[in-house]
Length: 96
Image 1 (cartoon, rainbow, N blue to C red):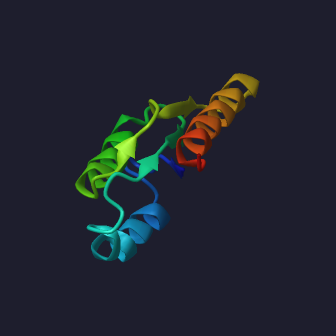
Image 2 (image 1 turned 90 degrees about the horizontal axis):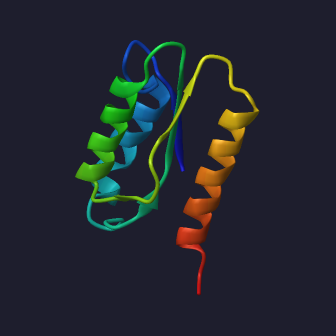
């Protein structure tokens, strides 16, 4: 599960640093890894979504659900979409 605020049209510096740290370590070992993504922003999150999915695709990870875009103050509907996203990712990686 990946999550980030949208900062000036891009993922957070913390998530980018994490990708930079794990990229070559995981590039071959984690191909096919399922993931989900949520992004929070005030106006537009498209650039942040695109930047994360580009790196995840480069790692060979498999997106198991559409990214959850949360615009403005998170409300119950946004939280419910994030819970559902988490459930899909969990069901995808659950053994058996």
